[in-house]
Image (cartoon, rainbow, N blue to C red; front, top):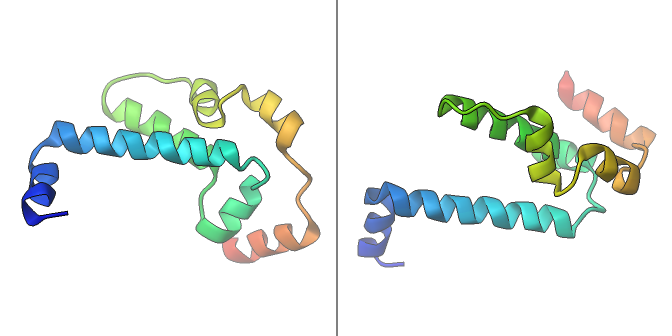
Length: 106
């Protein structure tokens, strides 16, 4: 990317927001395509999970004066109601996963 293009992204807030929104949609698609990656795996490796994204979604909306229900945000992030995703895709965390998570919390 040229310096001019880079500066245009920086200067044009609307364009920057469009690019960031596209990246967010791609992240959600990637997570949806990899349902085998459990939230505890994400937490252990990256320090955030799908639920964190849902909370950040709610917080960002509230910062802009928009009220978004947490469950609605979860549905946006998970691509379906959380209860459905959980029953279809969530596995029980292994003792090793839980131990790693607990160690990181201290």
